[in-house]
Amino acid sequence: MGEFRDHVYRLMLDRKLCLAIVQLQAERRLGRSFSAMLPFVEGLHSLGYLSDGDYEVYKAKYSVVLDNTPLTPTQNREQETKENRDRQLNRHYKAVLEQWATLKEQSKKYHLKKAEVDKRLKYARLVLKRHSQEKEASQ
Image (cartoon, rainbow, N blue to C red; front, side):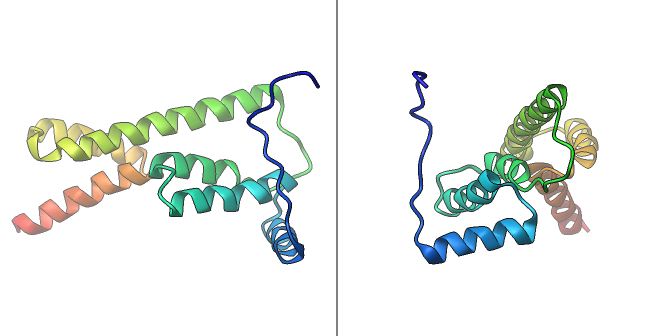
């Protein structure tokens, strides 16, 4: 127990908050720590302290339903790798949106094709939406 644990927070909940967390845990079939982390992440995002891309990753991470089979270390690594990749892709699509007006048509087509594959990500969907809006405006 002599390890550095500055990242650990203990929360003292009153009766109403405790019951709310237990209800969230039961209704969403979450583990105990996930049922505390999910509203924490939601709050940080709504207050503006967590970016949209990070929010999407954390929300997905802490919304995982309990089942009877725990993840193996390999599955954990694969999940972390996927989450990191999704975070990088979200940043990429955000940068594409910021540069959209200056992109050549061929480059836009390339990013649209990739965004179609990654449309589960928020910024990929925004790229597709931007293209649709442009298309409607030109007609």
